[in-house]
Image (cartoon, rainbow over all chains, first blue to last red; front, side, top):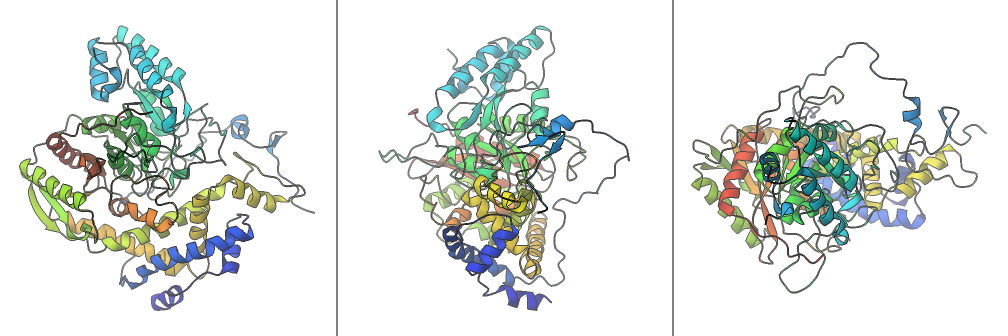
Length: 106
Length: 493
């Protein structure tokens, strides 16, 4: 599987349409000029990180915790709440105790 | 007469206790320096009233015989820590005006210890940068200048550039920093101060604006090693609200300080002797080796074979985590909202994020989104997580042969603002020596050790095994005592 992955990553480069697609997945509006400028920048960075493909990682598990640490469980008890006004205090638009957003359904 | 703003944290603490001066006098002196240093742009928000309020309390506490560990000490707070009632921006437009209704764990600990806040320090936007040129609120300027007669504005390093500039210019005796790939250590090196990133999990991330959660770690910056130990003792500690917080007692690092390294082994990783290392940095590294020998340590050569893969690993993992963390900025719950005429919800998200994030933040979000996207996840992200495991294993192997590692902190002295802006990759290479320890979660510190050929500060870098901040501090102290670094920038601001 790894070999296949490396083959797909190596030598790959992003084009204008890919940049626009990724920007849209990331919910970032980009102008045509911004997207065009990003193409060589991203390719430079991606080409550079692709050298990781040459590292032999046979039998190595991906790191999941940098310092070994047990995931703690806490008491199933309410420790917070009744702070609606605090939660809404920084909202760009709060109405009737809710976050307000533009119309979602046409 | 004592210039109060020239005192270290320990000197302020002890002098205040001894009755040599009041906390109010100290706060007023630093407030005045802050107010007179606008040209450095080190602060996004100044809070002289907070510093005075804490000082009044400290003066009362002293009269009542109820001193706290940092009574009388005013500090700067990197604007990545949420401070209740005081704007917290991460140097971004998207959080401009955001006023937290809660306090971060680390800042609360410092206030509980008696410290006062001089203001919120500027930084690279969302802590993404190595020069403090990505802040929405303008570049921070280093107080240092090259000894070439020119007045080129120099980078204070990043991302904790406001912290480094302010400490170096005597606007505060100490400050908080955060370090994801070198953001405490590289700026400390650039301005001739000390800074330590503790073991990942020592300082709670609760209330710290997230960049890359598996790497982000808070730590102190100050003028010397002792002050870093004092500050760190009052920042670290278990916090159940951070799932990766370490449930361990906070060691007495200050009491444990000793520059006698007899019986200790210092490892020199051969892979850090990178091609094209400037001669002054190579020379300083050799000098550091001699100093640690003089302190009683034995020097051993070690190998960290995957060092060259650390930066590319970091530039997959950090943007991947950032793209996920920064998804929260949606224009709904807090921060900026951009709502073009007739826009629907999706348009609002995209417009808000386009207007609210700077170019470097966008670049990293897009890279992160790409390496996490279907079809590329295994090739980029999983592969990087595996290489990260190998990098951590390199350190484990090295620490079977030695107690602490010595390397340079940064591959160059401070560069001029604008010099590396055009090429993102050239900027990323600044973190070549600091990133590996971040990926492995290890404690690491920069101490000022000498001057470059241009008369600019250069730091040496110590990396310790997990949880052994003490050996890092002690080796740092051994260098500090021998380097006798007293250079400071001439005041031009």
